[in-house]
Amino acid sequence: MVLRWSQINADRDTACTLRYFGFKDFPIEIATRILVLATATSTYWRTYQSLILVSREMQALVYDACLPYLPVMLHTRKHFDSFCMLLASHRTAVGPRIRHVWFIAGIKASIERTLGLTILQKCTRITHIACNINLLRAFADSSEAFVHHDLKHLTLVESMIPWAQLLHQPASHQLFTQLTHLRVSGGTKFVIPDFYFASLRPYSGTRLRSGLASVSLPKF
Image 1 (tube, rainbow, N blue to C red):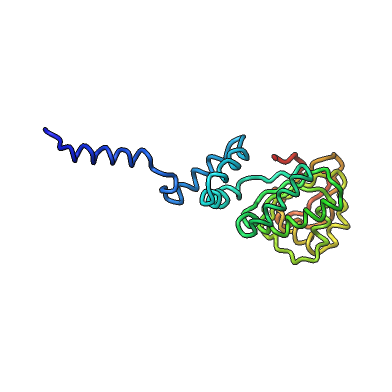
Image 2: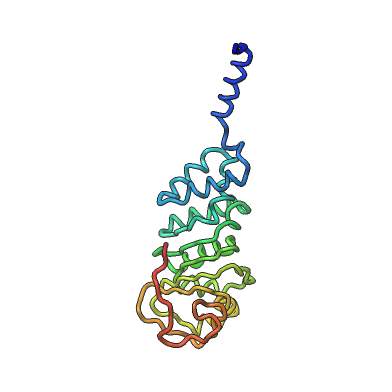
C-alpha cells in the first residue's frame, strides 16, 4: 500500500493537534475536576497560588473550582490584611465561594473584631469557622442581619465560654440552633449551657447534659 504525501502530512498534523490539546479545550466539568484534584494535596496553597498566576481565565476557573474546598487559615495580622484586600478587590469572585475560615491569629482584640467582622460580612456562605470568644461575641452583637445560614461547624478556640452572654443575642441564638458540629479547643473546662441545640450531632433532638459534650481538636 502506497501512502500519498498529503495523507502523511495530514496524519502528522492530526498527531500534533492531539499532542498539544490545550487545557482550555477540556469541557468545563473535566477542567474543574482536574483543578480540584490538583489542590487536594499537602501543598495545596502553593499549587493554588501558581495556578492563579497562569492567566486571568485560569484565575477565574481556579476561584470557582477550588475556593470552596480550600481552608483559609489566618494566623497573623498580615494574613488578615491580605485576605481583606483580596475580598475587596474580588467582591463577587472570592467571598461567595469561601467555605472554611480559621481565625486563629494572636492579634489585638479590637483589630480582630474589626477585620474579622469585615471578612464574615463578605463571606456569607461559610460552612466552617474556628474563632475565639472575642470574635464570636462581635459576630453576635453585630447590627447586620444574620445571613450565615450555611454555617454548621463551629470550633471555639477558648477554654471558658460565657454562654449567658452569647445566647442573649438573637444572632448567636440562631447560630447555635443551626449548628451540627460544635468543637472546643484550648482548655479542659467546658460547661454545657441550658440550651436546646436543635441540630447538633450526635445528640441531635436531645437536651445536652453535663459530661456529654463532644470536645475535640479541629482538623485545620
